[in-house]
Image 1 (tube, one colour):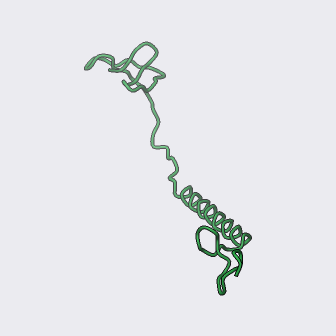
Image 2 (spheres, one colour):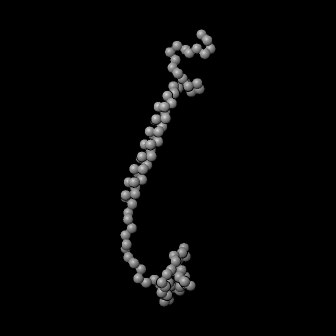
Image 3 (cartoon, helix red, strand yellow):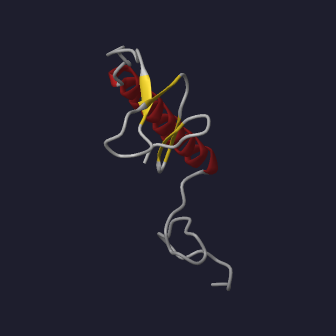
Length: 96
């Protein structure tokens, strides 16, 4: 027997791993099918999540807004106020 002669009964083996490799087109088809299945599953999951999201409901309106710069004193009516981490802030006043 020569050095490059195949042994009797041996299959086509990968040179380093000793495992039989699938044909290249079959590997591409399986990879593409797995990828498309994952994308389809993610899309279906996102659509089902979106449909369960609750809608916002109007629960009330603001009729008047007051800022109380000093505790237990009379409030000052404002038309607009900004919500900050320290409380409401009007044009020149801040709520405590």
